[in-house]
Length: 128
Image (cartoon, rainbow, N blue to C red):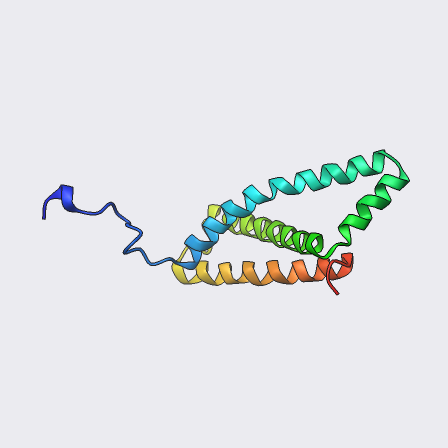
């Protein structure tokens, strides 16, 4: 087989996704979408600075179900990005680099991301 006929490695058609690759892609995606939470934060600060009536309007919008769903996913993205960042720091120190331990740590990150998101959402009244 000629070198020109070989696929670029790793080719997407033959590459089997692993938990670490999926979590890495998800880490980048959540990092991008967390930028939009800055807009909500700025709107919150602006509503505080514009007075009590404006703040009450902001709070009424926050109570709408679709906005609560967006907040839950923002929390999920925040906690996932935070915990997965810690996982990357642990890797930088040379720990849990092996395939099995890396996958286990990835599942731990997912578990705690969902758990913390649910706990904080319950405390803030987003769900429940």
